[in-house]
Length: 84
Image (cartoon, rainbow, N blue to C red; front, side, top):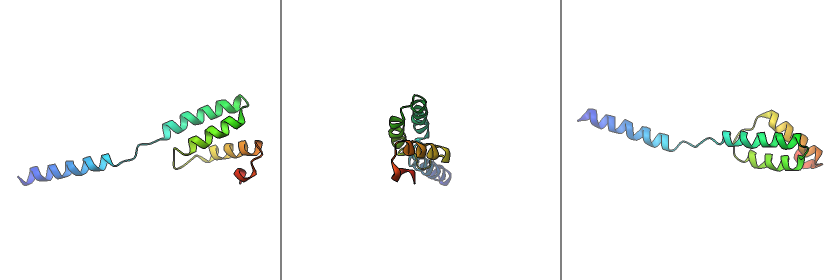
């Protein structure tokens, strides 16, 4: 009986632990970022910057290269507060 109780307890802890994990939004972020790059190549900088701002809300950490490219978009759009 103790063995069954131990197994049940471990399974219960595992189930609650897995259920509480946050799903990753990085795949969605990279899909949007690829669209940003396509817009940049099409010289649609304003749309690219707006899409980047939407994408950055999806994840906690953004690669530095992506932040630097967003900074250059802000510079091209002459939005000085966003270039800092």
